[in-house]
Length: 439
Image (cartoon, rainbow, N blue to C red; front, side, top):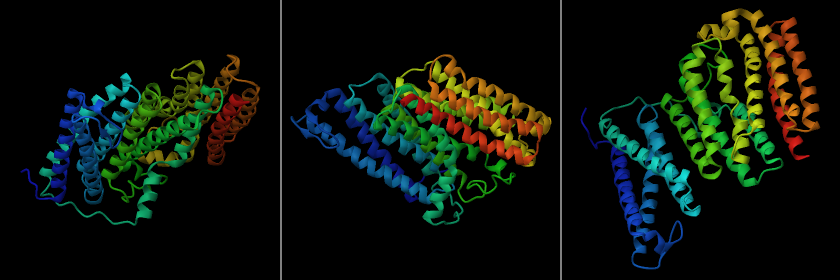
């Protein structure tokens, strides 16, 4: 293949490369000369000495590069929907570019905290690697002609990206995150902390869901429940699904690290890797214990909330993790009973497929009993009050009845009831935890 500037996209990426090169060179000059001290203000500063104009020039080129980055990003999402390298590369390059600018501004305002200094340096290196790769691949792909993707209205596309985010799951995860935040604060947290924690958590959960559907796009075609998902149905391209997921996950880390704290950011990142790589790539089709082990991914959000509030993890945070961890198997096994034929057709070794419905019903009852026992650890260690204790006993009684029905009666109807009740159970027990923390 021969490098060429024949396509407008390759020319745009080269112009972006040059503009960011100027930004980097001027940034180094500002750092070496100390020009940053002679021009105060952002995004525009007023020079107090001739040296201050160096910083002003740096800020001006940041503005130019930002416009170029926005143009390249827009062009990629319009013209490179089918390209599995250019669209993801452009997307993550854009996130890192604007993330770098955000971290740089926060560094100055917060007297250069160590974790932001490290993140700034790592982002700079990663940005240049991504940018060089983008310029090279754009030039090498200048002669390629990709099939035109079906055109959709903006309303349809927005709806498909919304579906790709699995909003109901995101909402449930945000509830557990906020409960951890309230419990850690022992009251209502500040609006600022709440906003940034929930925004970062929403992006991480939605991005992970999108990457999960990108990985499972061929498998989803074989299941009635998932065949109409945007990637499986072809309404969105694989490149769009991958790019969207990477964009949200990467943006979530910058937000968590910049506006919450390092521990919350690392926990959120751990949850992303756990769900995307450990569960989606490996566990889901490898073992009948996929849901049991994979449940750790969904159990991390309340720990993120606790870490956001306190900056550390205490015993209560680990018990919250254990509650969601133990809740996951009976919840998803109930669904697996209802959708057993789907999972069997897709080759996913869910418990009812491998060991039969009877064994699954027994395990649902067993894990439900263990879940209720775990929820009572919080009052046992005197970490909560009477509101939570009473709520956990009442809610546990309802869930135990549903699990007992699954065990004794069997069939899809009671399994579906268990699935729905277990969703409400998790929501209400974390609501009880919040009420208990503020009364």
